[in-house]
Structures are given as structure tokens and as C-alpha cells.
Image 1 (spheres, one colour):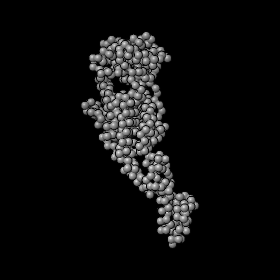
Image 2: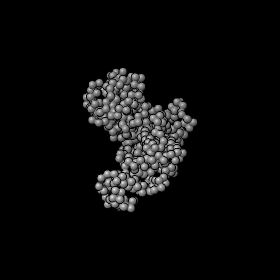
Image 3: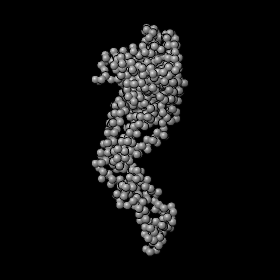
Image 4: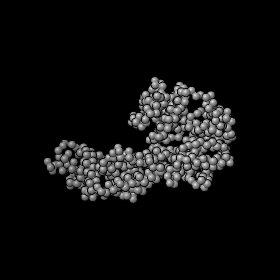
Length: 529
């Protein structure tokens, strides 16, 4: 059995990882948990684990600090990083220090299983002491092309250091004359009648490989790496070569000659072997853009957009507006705002399906929570929430996710219309209770509208409809009635009573009191004495 440690500053994530993976079936035993970077380093020092799965952002030492520390001590521990967000700079640093993989939360089980499987393979390979000489002996039994492909595959997956790869390529005398490399990730479209049969897929991949090699070799050198559902091409080319144009030509030729569609993700240009891993990861990210922009075309990798406070600002404002439209039962306005939210979600996701699904899940959750806060409907059960997530994760296109969320929104509107009378009574009670308990505070029409997620104009009409008074009249009446009680039953000064019922200015209070009762406060008190 191999030993492993799980680390995250959120214990719930660790519990989830324990349940998600069949550890014993993989030959792995969990020997410890950590919640901080320093705690993880102490535990590694104590347990000497074969594998660590850790959040990259933790208090008291980041995941990058941990893997640097592991390297400095020349430990054989393999590290898999997980992160709550997709940050290519973090990923590059992680891979540069020898991480096995970098996964983005919410973690997909298959991706984590693949990463653990790779780590287990690496550990066992080292345990069997297959050193450089042993690997060279294996390489010598293969033809040069296969050796080069295997070598580049290991470079792309981060399973070999650049120095060793250069030395092995030197021995193989591979013809790679240009200084630059770019990874292209190709994925075949599904057969028009369903999934491809295995023999059909093998034949098609063989034909696609031959066509791509012929196309690339007109100007460049290429190494083809086989994949289950497609290919990865590592193109060796001169600086400035337009790889996106080449990818577009591939799409056109494959569709024209082979009558099938292919989607191509184009990675960034790498100068030398040391950049191949980064280009490969970028090509995979670019391929994910088809989730948003459509399959059967080329997608160029773009650096992730900066997100943060600005992103949360726009989303919060749009979500509030959406909730207001829901409560007002304005379907057309709600769908218009929802469409804008979808555009923003796709933009901020940076090509990540996981990020887009997480944002849509959060949107549904917050809408349900907002309705519940104003007394409408029951909270979504954990089973219902998991159903949302599973359904959206199962879709292959963002358009399908949008249709699902839109359907849920229309369902909310239907329930609101069906229970309109009871809902409005609950909202009115919430407003009145708040005023009765907080009349001494600075209550405004805007703050009350916000309490029930309405815009001020709509709330003003809503309030008058249910009370026969405008909001300001009602609030003044509540305050004046309380002021009369304090005036007649306490010895408080006029200015003290004014402050107690929400007026900072005693003169303003006296004027309002006279307008309400026809007398100034002290006259009213004298007349009742």
C-alpha cells in the first residue's frame, strides 16, 4: 500500500475527498490530514508519504511553498494540487516544481482518479529503480519514432525533467530543427448516429493522423501523441509561424476529405522543450472553449482574464436585479437580465466548463435563498441542489446549461404567480415587523425595498396598495404614536424623545408632531396633564 496525506483549509473538502475516491482499491492508504501549509510540511516530515493531495492556497504556507520544501529535501513524495479557481500562473509554477497535476474545484472524480493513477505509476516506477540506464535500454528496443513520441508524451504530461529529455533526444538524434514548439489538441466530433464504434474510431484517427502529418510537414516537423478521443500534435516550427491558421486548415481539410468534424485547441508558443508542458495545458484549455463557442472549429488559447472584486460586483448587482424582477413577476425583464448574466458567466469562466457550471449552480442557489428570505417557498433540499449540479455537469454544451437554468427560473415564476396573495402578505408582514422593531433607525424607502428585493418604485406602489398610505406617512405615524407614549409616560426631555423615535433634529420632530396632532409636544403633554 502507498501512503497519502490530504490537505485543505476546509475540513469539508477533506471529508469529500475521502468519500469520493475508492482509496483501498487503488492501493492507497490515507495516513494523515493537514489544514495549513506548515502543518502539512510537519506531517510530511513525520510520515514520509508517497502522495500528497493539497489545496494550493492555504494559510501559513502555500502549496507552492510545500512542493519547494519537498524538492529541497529530495523527498520522493508526489504532489497533486487542487484549487478553487483556475489560475494559469499557479499551474505553471506547480508544474515547474514537479507537481503531478493541477485540478480545479469542483473536482471531477475521473480527473482526480487519473491524476492519482499517474502518481501511483510514478511512485512504483521509481520504487522499481527504473533509472536512466534502464529506460534507455527500453528505448533501444523500439524504433526511433516511437521513442520520440513516448518522450514528448512524458514531457507533455510533466513526467520527465527537461534536462533528461534533452539528453535522450540527443542520443536519439531526432530531426527537430526549429527552436519553437506549439501543442495542438484535436478532438473528433461524435458520429451523427451516436458514439463511434471502437474500430471506426481507430480507422478515423489513423486517417486524421496521416492527413495532419502531411499538412504540417510541408513547413514544420511534428510529433503525434495518440489520445483516446483524439490526437495531440507537438509541432516544431520557426518563430512567428501562425499555428492558428494551420489549425483552421486542418479543420477544413479533415471535414472536406474525411467528412467528419474536428475541434482543435491551439496552445501558446514555447521556446524550447521546457515550455512544452505549458503549451500542452494551454491547448487543452483552448479545447474547452468549444463548450461555449461550438465544436468543429479551431480555438486559440488566451491568457485567463483577471477576476476578483469587479467580477463579484457585477454579478451581485445583476443577481439582485434578477430577484427583483422575479418578485415583481416580470418574466420578460427577468429573462433579459438572465441573458446578461449568462454572457458574464461565460466570459469570467475563462473557457472552464467547471467554473461556468459552478457559477450557474450558485445563481440558482442564491435565487432560491433570496425567495426564502422574504418568506416565499421552502429552501432547496440537499438532494435537489445535488440534482442541479449533476444535471448541469452532464451537459456537453453551455447552451444546454442555459436552457436548464432558464427552465428553473420559469418554474420559480410559476410558483410565485400561483401563490401570489400569500406571498405578498408575508412580504408586507416582514416590512411592518421591521419598522415596528427599528423605527428609531434611519429607515428609508430604499432600505425597505431592498429588504424584500424590490426596486423602490415598485415597492412604493406595493406598500400603498396594502396599507392605503404611502411609506413615509406610515413610518411617521408609527414614530409619532411611540412618541406620544414616551411623552405621557416618561420624564424624558423633548430632544431625548426625538432621538428615541428616529429624529436627530428636535425642531424637525416638533414640527412633525404638530403636523400630526395639531400641537407641539410640550403643549400636548400639558393638555393631557
